[in-house]
Length: 130
Image (cartoon, rainbow, N blue to C red; front, side, top):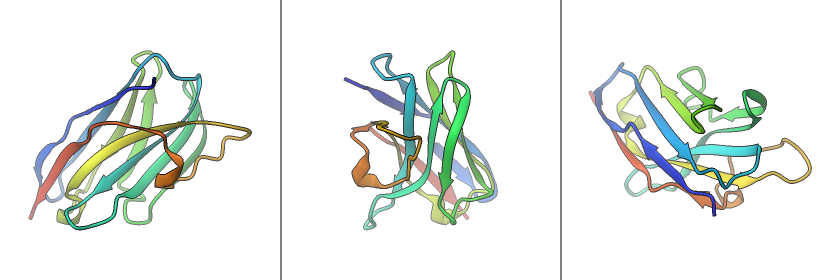
């Protein structure tokens, strides 16, 4: 069973930065497809970025237009941790943020479609004040 535990959420002023971390359990494949999602009150959970990788090599990445150029997903293979670096934060970025994972099949294609992901963390709150 793959387990994911997020950390790093908090409150920040607009224009600030936060880095979220997602600790990945050891019971997961070497080839990984993972994503970051967020859900604001009264809104659908949206995929903001996804990445397919093995160790420190990335084979696919995809970001929502709303975060492109501001958010970056990275991984630390030694720590079994996925990160979401968030810069130039805006009040509309306020949400509960989730990391998610699924098993890859025949390719590195790893789009940020919520219905494709099988494993989810518990979420961490990010609040951006103006």
